[in-house]
Image 1 (cartoon, protein in one colour):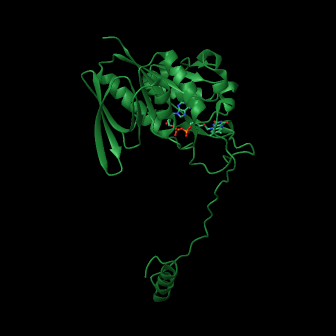
Image 2 (tube, helix red, strand yellow):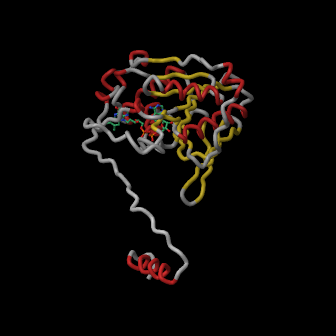
Length: 267
Ligand code: FAD
């Protein structure tokens, strides 16, 4: 049996647990280089599913992590190798900067073709862009089936059996091995970095490809290839009004009840 190539789409995102410094500038773009970054959480769930699938295939698979972003996204890709991915490619070029989800998906689809992967895994959604567009758009660009909201992926003969998590239950679907699967946060957590792999691949080479390396239509990359324009955005600042310490005295309980009545929490 020939080795199955699995592409894993990894986005390095701003760690949104920090609250300052990520408001967009006047041109509607964010300077991500200036902010702390992590692997998008759902992409780690997707990585775990690829590793389990490789185990089910008796190791007969190669997992290639692919990211598009600034040079420092190589850190995220190296972490994927430490967690079990076999290879990594970073698309990094000024020509792909300012891409909306359509231009991002176009570049990623070209990279997947160049890698020669038939099965693609991605996170369901990012914690910064939050659109959940990229997985489905990549599937569309490649002309392959897509399975979203995956929670468990199992091999059954020449097919994949995928359990999809829905709002009111789950659904089990079968697909060929040529498909794109987006994995949500209800899927199993990713295993930790392996110490031996970390030592072995501390300086693992991350291949870097430019827009020209992707052999596509240059007018479809980056800002030039992005039909979406951010017209206006405003950061929401939440402020605490401070706290009140209540005792169990009759007066304090009466104050609390009055406040809960006034804001309609109780009748
Ligand atoms: P989702 O669709 O929510 O992601 C789903 C999954 O797709 C992820 O979990 C991951 O597996 C995969 N994925 C998503 N993005 C990538 C990626 N880059 N590499 C690999 N896998 C990925 N962003 C900038 O950093 N700089 C800019 O200047 C910029 N300009 C923009 C201009 C416009 C007009 C718009 C609309 C967006 C711009 N963006 C910019 C945001 C950029 O388009 C998104 O970050 C990107 O398309 C991914 O969208 P998302 O975060 O909503 O991903």
